[in-house]
Amino acid sequence: EAKKLPEQVTFYEPSMANGREVQLVLENELYKALENNELFLQYQPQLKLNNTDLISMEALVRWKHPEKGLIPPSDFIPIAEESGLIVPIGKWVLETACRHTKELQDALGQPVRVAVNLSLGQLFHENFVEVVRSILKETDLSPESLQLEITESMTMDTQFLMPILQDLKKLGVTIALDDFGKGYSSLAYLKDLPIDCLKIDRDFVKNMKDDEHEPLVDLIISMAKHLKLNVVAEGVETIEQFNYLLNRECDAIQGYLISKPSSFEKVLHNCKNKVNS
Ligand code: C2E
Ligand code: CA
Ligand code: CA
Ligand code: CA
Image (cartoon, rainbow, N blue to C red; front, side, top):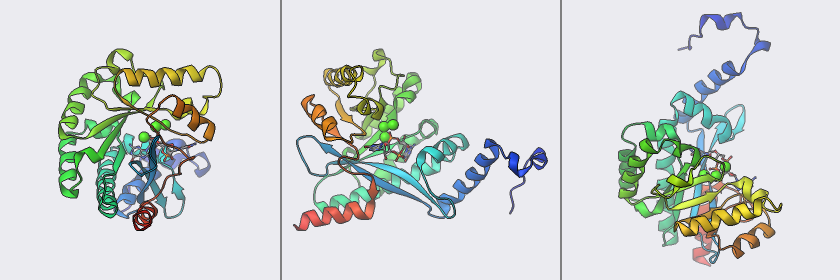
């Protein structure tokens, strides 16, 4: 059944198509994308600085659009968030990531942790904690193998967030604060948030070379240590950045230097090769 457009839309010339219309089309297509299995996950490893085993990885969602090709999450997550589609999409991401990780663990014979990105809309939706609980049960993944990533901007509303994070922690999952350093977190409540890990935003790592950013990265790492949090640097692209972070005792790194995000099949294949070698 064709979707009826609001009447005023008929007055627009196609050439005048504005952002809102493009967005409506994408929203409609995104709705179908979930049903048509056009979404898939890639995984990017996080490397502990003293170990080369695959210990942890982040799940990143992609959309393979039948005509438009590969659409990055930065183009469709905001639409999913605005339309509420983030709830079913987020659930699909969680389920898929947990199922894949369990499969990987079985192939490797050792634990691997997966980090899954969350949007505020998912947390707002009632029963989010129950959703996580039932997915863990259904996929038989142990809670320690799941890390949930929230962004710094979500921590604005601590009164709302705190009880949910506490309930999630009770399940046994860990929580990472993503994109740290972008400028929302107040140090006052950073110490109260029940988080386990800080992820230094890519921009800080990228600009580390210049004198202004280096002390900031140092500061974030020492603050994380002080608060007994793990610290992960993201977007590490060069050996210089790697060495710098190693010297500063950053716990883990993630970035193109180690690996670009890759398909589950590839990650599984690599793991199986390692086990057999
Ligand atoms: P993020 O959580 O900060 O994820 C890291 C992003 O940096 C990813 O982009 C990753 O591919 C990219 N990246 C990793 N290493 C490097 C590097 O060395 N250099 C550079 N230049 N980039 C690197 P991606 O996959 O395009 O994701 C963008 C954002 O979309 C994510 O940022 C996250 O906020 C959001 N996102 C991705 N998947 C999901 C999801 O399942 N749910 C939600 N809510 N958001 C998601
Ligand atoms: Ca993330
Ligand atoms: Ca990030
Ligand atoms: Ca980021």
